[in-house]
Length: 493
Ligand SMILES: [Zn+2]
Image 1 (cartoon, rainbow, N blue to C red):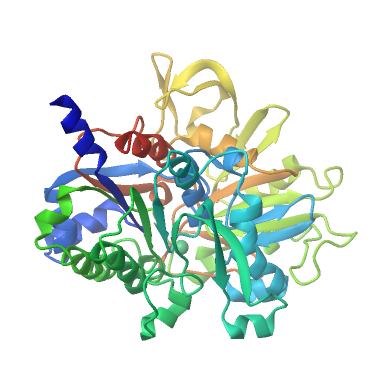
Image 2 (image 1 turned 45 degrees about the horizontal axis):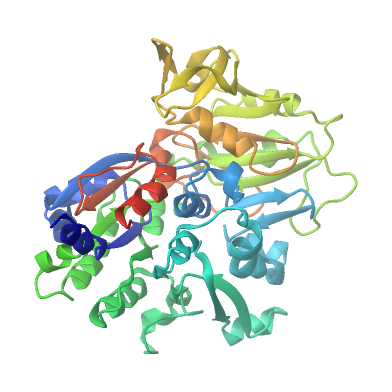
């Protein structure tokens, strides 16, 4: 009898829906106001985890890499949306703003986005959940996720317009999950030239939902499916964190998905549904002069690399701006040491975390308060996530408390591991800055979100997302995105 139960349990599939910027407070509000019946259905029939910790920086490409590999950026090697490649001496940008991509060179940028991120930059020594499940003989699907590496070769079909303006070929080989949708570049359902298929090259909620519905209706859902719904990000960026219009819109798509079944209850029967956000967002001040921290101004006494020219001999500093977080690189540690750059940035009270490595230790200072905090891994104190650290200095800088030899986080969830992993995520001499809620960094051509919201930072407003789970009472070892891969694998064992 036991055997039968476990066999039938094995048939259950995981359907994971990543809703960009799904946070608990607006979700709760939308459900209360009756604006989200599908979310309500899943919540009533499952468990809600309001605060799952996202990795750092809280940018989708880094988060998705952590989700798929169960590691932080020091292991998976996708440091952020924008970062400086020390060996190639160039800024990598996976798509912050078209202005910046054009300045960096559109062919190189498109190659980074369409090919390098999955096939070159994402650490080949570790396995994604697609590769892991595939090696166990299981089929997986990825629909519109930016990070999708798997064992199956696919051809991305590039639109003519893109091949005209770049020197890219019409087709680009990539390795993805067996079932694979990547906007209009690669799709599952037979071609229907609906308007939304072409909108943002197919990276929109309606197309994501259509591809998932296709798998359900043709009874071809594999063991694991991950579907990315991108649209809410932009709505929150524009209107602020408590805007529920985005939840209402994506809920309509979820209703359409549930309607594929004879009844909504039927949808729960053979599936584990995991519905969650990838990063949060913090509000941005409506006064432009206050809201935007212009790093070229803050560091004007240094020679800063321009996007169009790339690294020149006289350049001292490179900016890798990720909205509310930035990597700041020194190309000349003698004339522009990190500790001097840090002190300059500390004069701005809108910057609440400034961190860099000195030998094995991380040094942290803040524009908000005096003092210094130093830490390194493998010490005598243990934190909430079973990680051990040596710490000294002012705990207040990272809003930490220590009780009975245990480190407890508050404003900056999992701060030590997230800072340490970011500072060891790639080669180079750099520091990491994170802005106080209300503010964001800009460099040359950065997108801005004055009066709206933004993310990337270490603060809990950027870092906490909500998750709804149906079909199981088990939960991940810790409530962090990096702990989900191992847990999902146990669901499919
Ligand atoms: Zn965003």
